[in-house]
Image (cartoon, one colour):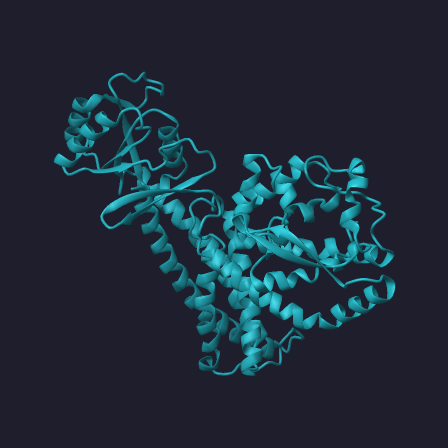
Length: 481
Protein backbone atom coordinates (compact mmCIF):
# COMPACT_ATOMS: atom_id res chain seq x y z
CA UNK A 1 0.00 0.00 0.00
CA UNK A 2 2.80 2.42 0.86
CA UNK A 3 4.50 1.75 -2.45
CA UNK A 4 1.30 1.86 -4.51
CA UNK A 5 0.19 5.15 -2.94
CA UNK A 6 3.56 6.73 -3.64
CA UNK A 7 3.54 5.43 -7.23
CA UNK A 8 0.10 6.95 -7.76
CA UNK A 9 1.26 10.30 -6.37
CA UNK A 10 4.42 10.15 -8.49
CA UNK A 11 2.41 9.53 -11.65
CA UNK A 12 0.09 12.43 -10.92
CA UNK A 13 3.00 14.78 -10.16
CA UNK A 14 4.96 13.70 -13.25
CA UNK A 15 1.91 14.44 -15.42
CA UNK A 16 1.44 17.80 -13.70
CA UNK A 17 5.16 18.55 -14.07
CA UNK A 18 4.98 18.07 -17.83
CA UNK A 19 1.87 20.28 -18.08
CA UNK A 20 3.77 22.99 -16.20
CA UNK A 21 6.70 22.73 -18.63
CA UNK A 22 4.34 23.24 -21.57
CA UNK A 23 2.59 26.19 -19.88
CA UNK A 24 5.94 27.70 -18.87
CA UNK A 25 7.00 27.62 -22.53
CA UNK A 26 4.02 29.70 -23.64
CA UNK A 27 4.30 32.04 -20.64
CA UNK A 28 8.00 32.60 -21.38
CA UNK A 29 7.39 33.35 -25.07
CA UNK A 30 4.41 35.64 -24.66
CA UNK A 31 5.85 37.15 -21.49
CA UNK A 32 9.03 38.09 -23.30
CA UNK A 33 6.94 39.46 -26.18
CA UNK A 34 5.02 41.67 -23.72
CA UNK A 35 8.23 42.97 -22.17
CA UNK A 36 9.50 43.91 -25.62
CA UNK A 37 6.28 45.83 -26.22
CA UNK A 38 6.84 47.86 -23.06
CA UNK A 39 10.52 48.35 -23.87
CA UNK A 40 9.67 49.76 -27.29
CA UNK A 41 6.72 51.85 -26.01
CA UNK A 42 8.74 53.68 -23.37
CA UNK A 43 12.06 53.57 -25.27
CA UNK A 44 13.83 52.00 -22.28
CA UNK A 45 17.50 51.12 -22.46
CA UNK A 46 17.06 47.52 -21.26
CA UNK A 47 18.81 44.30 -22.32
CA UNK A 48 17.33 42.78 -25.48
CA UNK A 49 15.18 45.96 -25.93
CA UNK A 50 15.67 46.00 -29.67
CA UNK A 51 15.13 42.27 -30.11
CA UNK A 52 12.36 41.06 -32.44
CA UNK A 53 10.92 37.65 -31.61
CA UNK A 54 10.44 35.09 -34.35
CA UNK A 55 6.99 33.41 -34.62
CA UNK A 56 6.22 30.98 -31.79
CA UNK A 57 6.37 28.05 -34.23
CA UNK A 58 10.12 28.68 -34.51
CA UNK A 59 10.43 28.18 -30.74
CA UNK A 60 8.71 24.79 -30.58
CA UNK A 61 12.14 23.17 -30.93
CA UNK A 62 12.84 24.40 -27.37
CA UNK A 63 9.83 22.50 -26.05
CA UNK A 64 10.71 19.39 -28.07
CA UNK A 65 14.23 19.38 -26.63
CA UNK A 66 13.17 20.27 -23.09
CA UNK A 67 10.42 17.75 -22.36
CA UNK A 68 12.42 14.47 -22.63
CA UNK A 69 15.55 15.94 -21.05
CA UNK A 70 13.56 17.41 -18.17
CA UNK A 71 11.91 14.03 -17.48
CA UNK A 72 15.27 12.25 -17.58
CA UNK A 73 16.92 14.81 -15.30
CA UNK A 74 14.04 14.72 -12.78
CA UNK A 75 14.39 10.95 -12.53
CA UNK A 76 18.19 11.11 -12.24
CA UNK A 77 18.05 13.82 -9.57
CA UNK A 78 15.49 11.91 -7.48
CA UNK A 79 12.43 14.15 -7.92
CA UNK A 80 10.17 11.08 -7.76
CA UNK A 81 12.13 9.19 -5.12
CA UNK A 82 10.34 9.42 -1.77
CA UNK A 83 13.59 8.58 0.04
CA UNK A 84 15.38 11.73 -1.13
CA UNK A 85 12.93 14.62 -1.19
CA UNK A 86 11.89 15.97 2.19
CA UNK A 87 11.68 19.77 1.93
CA UNK A 88 10.68 22.55 -0.44
CA UNK A 89 14.28 23.81 -0.37
CA UNK A 90 15.53 20.41 -1.53
CA UNK A 91 12.89 20.41 -4.28
CA UNK A 92 14.02 23.87 -5.36
CA UNK A 93 17.61 22.60 -5.57
CA UNK A 94 16.54 19.68 -7.76
CA UNK A 95 14.44 21.76 -10.11
CA UNK A 96 17.01 24.55 -10.38
CA UNK A 97 19.70 21.97 -11.19
CA UNK A 98 17.53 20.40 -13.88
CA UNK A 99 16.73 23.84 -15.34
CA UNK A 100 20.41 24.79 -15.53
CA UNK A 101 21.09 21.47 -17.26
CA UNK A 102 18.23 22.09 -19.71
CA UNK A 103 19.47 25.60 -20.47
CA UNK A 104 22.87 24.30 -21.58
CA UNK A 105 21.33 21.42 -23.55
CA UNK A 106 18.96 23.79 -25.36
CA UNK A 107 21.79 26.27 -26.03
CA UNK A 108 23.94 23.47 -27.45
CA UNK A 109 21.03 22.15 -29.52
CA UNK A 110 20.27 25.57 -30.99
CA UNK A 111 23.96 26.06 -31.80
CA UNK A 112 24.16 22.72 -33.62
CA UNK A 113 20.91 23.43 -35.48
CA UNK A 114 22.15 26.97 -36.26
CA UNK A 115 18.98 28.57 -34.90
CA UNK A 116 19.12 32.17 -33.69
CA UNK A 117 16.42 32.32 -31.01
CA UNK A 118 16.00 34.68 -28.07
CA UNK A 119 18.18 33.85 -25.09
CA UNK A 120 15.76 35.77 -22.90
CA UNK A 121 12.94 33.35 -23.78
CA UNK A 122 15.12 30.36 -22.84
CA UNK A 123 16.18 31.95 -19.52
CA UNK A 124 12.57 32.89 -18.68
CA UNK A 125 11.40 29.40 -19.62
CA UNK A 126 13.93 27.58 -17.43
CA UNK A 127 13.39 29.96 -14.49
CA UNK A 128 9.59 29.69 -14.63
CA UNK A 129 9.79 25.89 -14.77
CA UNK A 130 12.04 25.65 -11.69
CA UNK A 131 9.95 28.01 -9.56
CA UNK A 132 6.59 26.68 -10.75
CA UNK A 133 7.50 23.03 -10.12
CA UNK A 134 8.66 23.83 -6.59
CA UNK A 135 5.42 25.70 -5.86
CA UNK A 136 3.37 22.91 -7.44
CA UNK A 137 4.96 20.22 -5.27
CA UNK A 138 4.53 22.30 -2.13
CA UNK A 139 0.84 22.94 -2.87
CA UNK A 140 0.21 19.31 -3.86
CA UNK A 141 1.74 18.04 -0.63
CA UNK A 142 -0.25 20.56 1.42
CA UNK A 143 -3.46 19.60 -0.41
CA UNK A 144 -2.93 15.87 0.15
CA UNK A 145 -2.23 16.41 3.83
CA UNK A 146 -5.30 18.59 4.22
CA UNK A 147 -7.45 16.11 2.34
CA UNK A 148 -6.25 13.24 4.53
CA UNK A 149 -6.68 15.36 7.68
CA UNK A 150 -10.34 15.75 6.70
CA UNK A 151 -10.62 11.95 6.61
CA UNK A 152 -10.79 11.67 2.81
CA UNK A 153 -9.00 9.03 0.75
CA UNK A 154 -7.61 7.18 3.79
CA UNK A 155 -6.48 3.55 3.66
CA UNK A 156 -6.67 1.54 6.86
CA UNK A 157 -3.62 -0.51 7.79
CA UNK A 158 -2.72 -3.04 10.48
CA UNK A 159 0.90 -3.95 11.18
CA UNK A 160 1.64 -7.43 12.51
CA UNK A 161 4.61 -7.42 14.89
CA UNK A 162 6.17 -4.97 17.34
CA UNK A 163 9.86 -5.23 16.41
CA UNK A 164 12.23 -2.91 14.56
CA UNK A 165 10.60 -3.50 11.19
CA UNK A 166 7.18 -2.55 12.55
CA UNK A 167 8.59 0.64 14.10
CA UNK A 168 10.28 1.61 10.82
CA UNK A 169 7.01 1.25 8.92
CA UNK A 170 5.22 3.27 11.61
CA UNK A 171 7.82 6.05 11.31
CA UNK A 172 7.50 6.01 7.50
CA UNK A 173 3.74 6.49 7.77
CA UNK A 174 4.13 9.28 10.32
CA UNK A 175 6.63 11.17 8.14
CA UNK A 176 4.43 11.03 5.05
CA UNK A 177 0.83 11.93 5.92
CA UNK A 178 0.28 12.83 2.25
CA UNK A 179 0.20 9.08 1.48
CA UNK A 180 -3.15 8.79 3.25
CA UNK A 181 -2.31 5.75 5.41
CA UNK A 182 -4.36 5.38 8.59
CA UNK A 183 -2.60 3.04 11.02
CA UNK A 184 -5.38 1.33 12.97
CA UNK A 185 -3.12 -0.68 15.26
CA UNK A 186 -0.79 -3.62 15.72
CA UNK A 187 -1.49 -7.33 15.73
CA UNK A 188 0.82 -9.38 17.92
CA UNK A 189 1.48 -13.05 18.29
CA UNK A 190 0.05 -14.75 21.37
CA UNK A 191 3.31 -14.94 23.32
CA UNK A 192 4.64 -11.49 22.33
CA UNK A 193 4.96 -8.72 24.97
CA UNK A 194 3.42 -5.31 24.26
CA UNK A 195 6.28 -2.85 23.66
CA UNK A 196 4.53 0.06 21.96
CA UNK A 197 2.53 3.08 23.12
CA UNK A 198 -1.08 2.32 24.01
CA UNK A 199 -2.70 4.92 21.73
CA UNK A 200 -2.89 2.22 19.06
CA UNK A 201 -5.25 -0.75 19.13
CA UNK A 202 -3.59 -4.07 19.92
CA UNK A 203 -4.93 -7.31 18.42
CA UNK A 204 -3.54 -10.46 20.04
CA UNK A 205 -3.46 -13.61 17.92
CA UNK A 206 -5.37 -14.75 14.84
CA UNK A 207 -8.83 -14.57 16.46
CA UNK A 208 -8.44 -10.90 17.43
CA UNK A 209 -7.12 -10.06 13.95
CA UNK A 210 -10.16 -11.73 12.36
CA UNK A 211 -12.46 -9.57 14.47
CA UNK A 212 -10.49 -6.46 13.52
CA UNK A 213 -10.90 -7.28 9.82
CA UNK A 214 -14.67 -7.40 10.35
CA UNK A 215 -15.00 -4.27 12.50
CA UNK A 216 -12.47 -1.73 11.18
CA UNK A 217 -12.62 -1.89 7.35
CA UNK A 218 -8.98 -2.92 7.08
CA UNK A 219 -7.49 -2.45 3.60
CA UNK A 220 -4.14 -4.15 4.15
CA UNK A 221 -2.13 -6.08 6.74
CA UNK A 222 1.68 -5.90 6.75
CA UNK A 223 3.60 -8.72 8.46
CA UNK A 224 6.94 -7.89 10.10
CA UNK A 225 9.54 -9.76 12.20
CA UNK A 226 8.08 -13.11 11.19
CA UNK A 227 11.07 -15.46 11.49
CA UNK A 228 10.13 -17.01 14.84
CA UNK A 229 6.34 -17.06 14.23
CA UNK A 230 5.94 -18.61 10.79
CA UNK A 231 3.06 -20.89 11.79
CA UNK A 232 1.09 -18.00 13.30
CA UNK A 233 1.85 -15.87 10.24
CA UNK A 234 0.46 -18.54 7.93
CA UNK A 235 -2.79 -18.71 9.94
CA UNK A 236 -3.15 -14.93 9.90
CA UNK A 237 -2.50 -14.70 6.14
CA UNK A 238 -5.17 -17.35 5.53
CA UNK A 239 -7.59 -15.38 7.75
CA UNK A 240 -6.91 -12.22 5.72
CA UNK A 241 -7.24 -14.07 2.40
CA UNK A 242 -10.59 -15.54 3.43
CA UNK A 243 -11.92 -12.01 3.91
CA UNK A 244 -10.32 -10.61 0.77
CA UNK A 245 -7.87 -8.36 2.61
CA UNK A 246 -4.52 -7.73 1.00
CA UNK A 247 -1.39 -8.86 2.88
CA UNK A 248 2.29 -7.94 2.54
CA UNK A 249 5.35 -9.56 4.06
CA UNK A 250 8.40 -7.49 5.03
CA UNK A 251 11.16 -8.77 2.76
CA UNK A 252 13.92 -7.83 5.22
CA UNK A 253 13.83 -11.20 6.98
CA UNK A 254 17.40 -11.05 8.28
CA UNK A 255 19.42 -8.42 10.12
CA UNK A 256 21.94 -7.84 7.35
CA UNK A 257 22.63 -4.18 8.09
CA UNK A 258 23.22 -2.05 5.02
CA UNK A 259 21.97 -4.74 2.60
CA UNK A 260 18.80 -3.85 0.70
CA UNK A 261 16.17 -6.36 -0.33
CA UNK A 262 13.81 -6.60 -3.28
CA UNK A 263 11.44 -9.21 -4.67
CA UNK A 264 11.28 -10.74 -8.14
CA UNK A 265 9.63 -13.81 -9.64
CA UNK A 266 11.31 -16.82 -11.19
CA UNK A 267 8.46 -18.58 -12.94
CA UNK A 268 5.75 -18.49 -10.29
CA UNK A 269 8.12 -18.51 -7.33
CA UNK A 270 8.83 -15.22 -5.48
CA UNK A 271 12.52 -14.64 -4.74
CA UNK A 272 13.90 -12.18 -2.19
CA UNK A 273 17.20 -10.59 -3.25
CA UNK A 274 19.69 -9.00 -0.87
CA UNK A 275 22.29 -6.57 -2.13
CA UNK A 276 24.36 -3.71 -0.83
CA UNK A 277 24.22 -0.29 -2.50
CA UNK A 278 24.46 0.58 -5.30
CA UNK A 279 23.24 -2.83 -6.52
CA UNK A 280 22.19 -3.07 -10.18
CA UNK A 281 20.45 0.30 -10.51
CA UNK A 282 19.80 1.48 -14.05
CA UNK A 283 21.66 4.72 -13.29
CA UNK A 284 24.90 2.70 -13.25
CA UNK A 285 24.44 2.03 -16.97
CA UNK A 286 24.09 5.79 -17.53
CA UNK A 287 27.19 6.34 -15.39
CA UNK A 288 29.14 3.98 -17.66
CA UNK A 289 27.93 5.75 -20.83
CA UNK A 290 28.91 9.14 -19.35
CA UNK A 291 32.34 7.74 -18.39
CA UNK A 292 32.92 6.44 -21.91
CA UNK A 293 31.88 9.68 -23.62
CA UNK A 294 33.86 12.01 -21.32
CA UNK A 295 36.97 9.79 -21.32
CA UNK A 296 36.90 9.61 -25.13
CA UNK A 297 36.56 13.38 -25.49
CA UNK A 298 39.24 14.15 -22.90
CA UNK A 299 41.75 11.76 -24.45
CA UNK A 300 41.39 13.66 -27.73
CA UNK A 301 41.41 17.14 -26.16
CA UNK A 302 44.43 16.59 -23.89
CA UNK A 303 46.51 14.72 -26.47
CA UNK A 304 49.01 17.63 -26.74
CA UNK A 305 49.42 17.62 -22.94
CA UNK A 306 50.02 13.87 -22.97
CA UNK A 307 52.72 14.32 -25.62
CA UNK A 308 54.45 17.09 -23.64
CA UNK A 309 54.43 15.00 -20.44
CA UNK A 310 55.84 12.04 -22.37
CA UNK A 311 58.70 14.18 -23.65
CA UNK A 312 59.31 15.58 -20.15
CA UNK A 313 59.60 12.11 -18.61
CA UNK A 314 61.92 10.96 -21.41
CA UNK A 315 64.23 13.94 -20.88
CA UNK A 316 64.20 14.05 -17.06
CA UNK A 317 64.36 10.36 -16.18
CA UNK A 318 65.53 7.29 -18.08
CA UNK A 319 63.05 4.44 -18.30
CA UNK A 320 59.51 3.75 -19.50
CA UNK A 321 56.99 6.61 -19.68
CA UNK A 322 53.99 4.60 -18.47
CA UNK A 323 53.91 2.82 -15.12
CA UNK A 324 51.62 -0.20 -15.19
CA UNK A 325 50.44 -1.81 -11.96
CA UNK A 326 47.99 -4.56 -11.04
CA UNK A 327 44.99 -3.18 -9.17
CA UNK A 328 41.75 -4.65 -7.82
CA UNK A 329 38.58 -3.48 -9.54
CA UNK A 330 34.84 -4.17 -9.44
CA UNK A 331 34.01 -7.13 -7.18
CA UNK A 332 37.66 -8.21 -7.05
CA UNK A 333 38.53 -8.17 -10.77
CA UNK A 334 42.26 -7.67 -11.41
CA UNK A 335 43.23 -5.14 -14.07
CA UNK A 336 46.30 -3.14 -15.13
CA UNK A 337 46.11 0.52 -14.09
CA UNK A 338 48.15 3.06 -16.06
CA UNK A 339 49.94 6.16 -14.77
CA UNK A 340 52.71 8.39 -15.99
CA UNK A 341 55.86 7.16 -14.24
CA UNK A 342 56.72 9.60 -11.45
CA UNK A 343 59.29 7.44 -9.63
CA UNK A 344 62.66 6.03 -10.45
CA UNK A 345 62.82 2.69 -12.27
CA UNK A 346 62.57 -0.20 -9.79
CA UNK A 347 60.87 1.90 -7.10
CA UNK A 348 58.68 -1.03 -6.01
CA UNK A 349 61.77 -3.05 -5.11
CA UNK A 350 62.81 -0.33 -2.63
CA UNK A 351 59.46 -0.21 -0.84
CA UNK A 352 60.51 -2.58 1.95
CA UNK A 353 63.37 -0.25 2.91
CA UNK A 354 60.85 2.58 3.51
CA UNK A 355 57.99 0.63 5.07
CA UNK A 356 58.88 1.72 8.63
CA UNK A 357 58.44 5.38 7.55
CA UNK A 358 54.84 4.85 6.44
CA UNK A 359 52.65 7.82 7.44
CA UNK A 360 49.38 5.97 6.87
CA UNK A 361 48.02 3.40 9.28
CA UNK A 362 46.56 0.19 7.89
CA UNK A 363 47.67 -1.65 4.73
CA UNK A 364 48.21 1.51 2.60
CA UNK A 365 51.66 3.09 2.15
CA UNK A 366 51.98 6.91 2.04
CA UNK A 367 55.15 8.98 2.51
CA UNK A 368 55.35 12.78 2.17
CA UNK A 369 58.92 13.06 0.93
CA UNK A 370 59.29 9.74 -0.82
CA UNK A 371 62.90 9.65 -2.11
CA UNK A 372 61.86 7.43 -5.03
CA UNK A 373 59.89 10.28 -6.69
CA UNK A 374 61.76 12.13 -9.45
CA UNK A 375 61.80 15.94 -9.61
CA UNK A 376 59.58 15.92 -12.69
CA UNK A 377 57.41 13.26 -11.09
CA UNK A 378 56.85 15.51 -8.07
CA UNK A 379 55.53 18.21 -10.40
CA UNK A 380 53.22 15.70 -12.07
CA UNK A 381 51.89 14.53 -8.73
CA UNK A 382 51.40 18.08 -7.48
CA UNK A 383 48.72 18.63 -10.12
CA UNK A 384 47.66 14.97 -10.51
CA UNK A 385 48.94 14.91 -14.09
CA UNK A 386 50.37 11.45 -13.48
CA UNK A 387 46.78 10.18 -13.28
CA UNK A 388 45.84 11.22 -16.84
CA UNK A 389 46.55 7.79 -18.46
CA UNK A 390 43.81 6.37 -16.23
CA UNK A 391 41.36 7.93 -18.68
CA UNK A 392 42.29 4.97 -20.88
CA UNK A 393 41.24 2.67 -18.02
CA UNK A 394 37.93 4.56 -17.87
CA UNK A 395 37.56 4.22 -21.65
CA UNK A 396 38.08 0.45 -21.37
CA UNK A 397 35.66 0.07 -18.46
CA UNK A 398 38.18 -0.97 -15.80
CA UNK A 399 37.58 2.28 -13.93
CA UNK A 400 35.12 5.16 -13.67
CA UNK A 401 35.69 8.90 -13.46
CA UNK A 402 34.32 8.86 -9.88
CA UNK A 403 34.64 5.96 -7.46
CA UNK A 404 36.83 4.52 -4.69
CA UNK A 405 40.51 4.47 -5.63
CA UNK A 406 41.59 1.01 -6.87
CA UNK A 407 43.75 -0.78 -4.27
CA UNK A 408 46.65 -3.11 -4.97
CA UNK A 409 46.07 -6.83 -4.28
CA UNK A 410 48.38 -6.82 -1.24
CA UNK A 411 46.19 -4.17 0.41
CA UNK A 412 42.99 -6.08 -0.30
CA UNK A 413 44.45 -9.24 1.22
CA UNK A 414 44.69 -7.35 4.56
CA UNK A 415 41.17 -5.91 4.45
CA UNK A 416 38.74 -6.66 7.21
CA UNK A 417 35.58 -8.25 5.82
CA UNK A 418 33.55 -5.02 6.09
CA UNK A 419 36.10 -3.13 3.97
CA UNK A 420 35.71 -5.44 0.99
CA UNK A 421 32.36 -3.78 0.29
CA UNK A 422 34.24 -0.86 -1.28
CA UNK A 423 35.00 -3.27 -4.14
CA UNK A 424 31.27 -3.38 -4.97
CA UNK A 425 31.65 -0.11 -6.92
CA UNK A 426 33.75 0.34 -10.05
CA UNK A 427 36.96 2.14 -8.90
CA UNK A 428 37.49 5.73 -9.98
CA UNK A 429 40.05 8.43 -10.66
CA UNK A 430 38.55 10.70 -7.99
CA UNK A 431 36.25 10.23 -5.01
CA UNK A 432 35.07 11.89 -1.77
CA UNK A 433 38.33 11.50 0.13
CA UNK A 434 40.29 13.22 -2.66
CA UNK A 435 38.12 16.35 -2.59
CA UNK A 436 37.96 16.48 1.21
CA UNK A 437 41.62 16.03 2.05
CA UNK A 438 43.40 13.82 -0.48
CA UNK A 439 46.75 12.77 0.96
CA UNK A 440 46.22 14.82 4.13
CA UNK A 441 43.99 11.98 5.32
CA UNK A 442 46.30 9.59 7.18
CA UNK A 443 43.71 7.52 9.00
CA UNK A 444 42.87 4.37 7.05
CA UNK A 445 39.54 4.02 8.89
CA UNK A 446 38.51 7.52 7.78
CA UNK A 447 39.47 6.73 4.19
CA UNK A 448 37.38 3.55 4.20
CA UNK A 449 34.48 5.35 5.90
CA UNK A 450 34.43 8.02 3.18
CA UNK A 451 34.49 5.41 0.40
CA UNK A 452 31.64 3.42 1.98
CA UNK A 453 29.69 6.64 2.53
CA UNK A 454 30.04 7.34 -1.19
CA UNK A 455 28.77 3.85 -2.09
CA UNK A 456 25.81 3.99 0.32
CA UNK A 457 24.65 7.40 -0.91
CA UNK A 458 25.69 7.17 -4.54
CA UNK A 459 23.81 9.06 -7.23
CA UNK A 460 24.65 10.64 -10.56
CA UNK A 461 24.23 14.05 -8.93
CA UNK A 462 26.82 13.12 -6.27
CA UNK A 463 29.28 12.14 -9.03
CA UNK A 464 28.71 15.51 -10.69
CA UNK A 465 29.38 17.36 -7.44
CA UNK A 466 32.59 15.40 -6.82
CA UNK A 467 33.82 16.14 -10.35
CA UNK A 468 33.21 19.86 -9.87
CA UNK A 469 35.06 19.80 -6.52
CA UNK A 470 37.94 17.86 -8.06
CA UNK A 471 38.74 20.64 -10.55
CA UNK A 472 39.92 23.24 -7.96
CA UNK A 473 41.55 20.51 -5.86
CA UNK A 474 43.69 19.52 -8.85
CA UNK A 475 44.38 23.06 -10.12
CA UNK A 476 45.59 24.31 -6.73
CA UNK A 477 47.10 20.97 -5.71
CA UNK A 478 45.24 20.75 -2.38
CA UNK A 479 46.72 17.96 -0.28
CA UNK A 480 48.68 16.50 -3.18
CA UNK A 481 52.16 15.03 -2.99
